[in-house]
Amino acid sequence: MKFVKYHAVGNDFIITDRTDINPENARDLCDRHFGIGADGVLVHYESEKADAGMKIFNSDGSIAEMCGNGLRCFTAYLVNDRDFTKNPLKIETGRGVLNVNWKKNDKETISVEAGLGIPEVKAGLKDIEFEGISLQTAWISMGNPHFVVFVQSACTPDKIYRIANHFQHNSGSGMEMNVEVVTDLNVKNKSVFLVVKERGAGFTLGCGTGGAAVIHALKMKGIVYEGLWTVFFPGGEAQYRISENGEVIVSGEPQKVFSGELEKGFLNGQF
Image 1: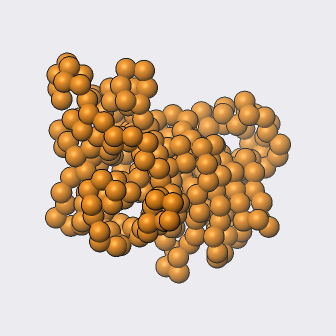
Image 2: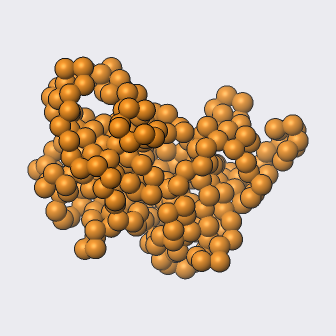
Image 3: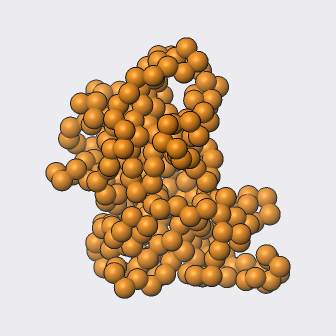
């Protein structure tokens, strides 16, 4: 099995065209001690609806409907490693076919601007309290479920992690959620800081669709109207904007880490 590994804001992915990947071996591949190590596996398949198809496995082997950083990394892989030249590219995902624009930069990197679709609000802004701290929350779908939490007062890192852990399973949605805890907001500089806990992957250094959910929640709060906003994740930053039709668009430079080939004996010879 040949593979490449990419990351976007520290959100890292193994990419392969082996369509026989299953939940069990995806989990083994993502193991950071005994495998390659990643937040997820992106499987490239031929699509009848688009230029390429992308199937997403989380690091625990579960299947993700959508992944914004994965989409950016997958686009860079198609251009860098599979010699795709069409621009924009249409990529089939669990959320349908999405359009992705790209351009090669002077420093031999690729900038990718990916449309993540129009957010769907499942539950509007709600003021609640958790362990004596005032919060404001919203449940937003980006093809996958996100629970956005705005911390209304000063909060210790330990409390932020407890908030994320709690609401992943106690959001009131009846399902496990991706949780984005907004820790700081600078309206003047159009920047927002957040911590992410993804279902199926745990705390990650970034989440493309999570950033999009936060930007849409800020629009619901009457803060984001137009122009570029910078979302700061633990692993780096990405640019977001809202199109005229309400779609959230993310842009940035995914990075290729390395390419490789599994030893024949890995996973008991499955590959």
